[in-house]
Image (tube, rainbow, N blue to C red; front, top):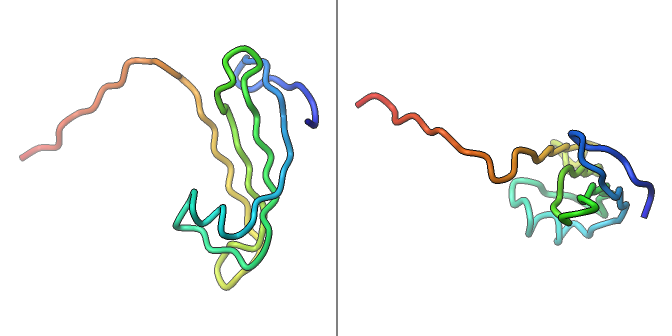
Length: 86
């Protein structure tokens, strides 16, 4: 536990952890790391849904340091998908 923050006007717990390279690759096969990856995850206080995640580690091109941030919002909102033209 790091702190309680707001993410898109939702109260969230910010949690810090470290994942192994294998765990990150299992979750995001596009990422290949040479070592551990630091992660910060924001989880909704009331609903326990993940609202934001930041991964930071040596998973860039040729093992260079890189960061990935994912923001998740609009849960249960209607979705409109337009079919492509034939």
